Amino acid sequence: MVALWPTILVGYTPNYFSIEDIVLQDVRVSCKFEVSVPKLGMLDQSADDQDLKQGSKVELPFWMVPTLHAKKVITFEIPRHYKVNYRQILQADSIVVDLHKWGPYFYDLGLHVANLDLKDSLDIKKSLVQTLLNRLRHIMDMSQHSTHHETVHLIANLDELERKLFGVGQLSFRSYKEWVRRESSKINTAALVASHRKRKFAEVTV
Image (cartoon, rainbow, N blue to C red; front, top):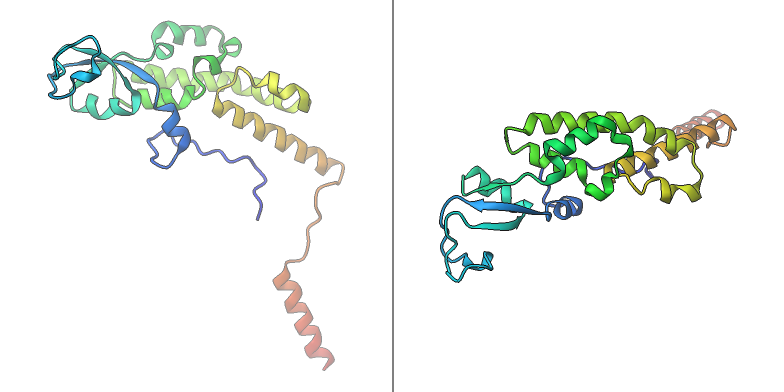
């Protein structure tokens, strides 16, 4: 059976087989090592020592952060778009914000960050939920009152999750219009039922 709806696979938890998850967690994060680590001096390009000394500041891909942070090897700086000043911008008027410029996987990465049990974790989660709620009606309205040629322009400032929701809105509205015009496919008799009827008819006529 062919799927009628765009696939939305959004887990907000690490997924080894998800290309999107790999891409979004490759974002560089500023980290400070709280312990010395042998043989990793190459991570700090300003140091000459082969060992990474305590207090060294380096940028690491986010996928390394959860494990190192949990083991208290590092502390890290929250990506700037999830800090309090940016959350205040979203609270003031999230609809006008270009979330794709802030990060194409803004919601996914934000929940990965919030799940690290930080002092700002609850506030980040609340901000993400409220931002999506505030923007969702506008996204659905755009998806149902736009032409195909307008789509590229309209989704330019949406993050990837919002773009998928936009696609779902377009498809559902298109299906609704086809139903109103009676253009949707007719309900056909199931093959198994049809076969059973033919067999019963053959038995009766024999």
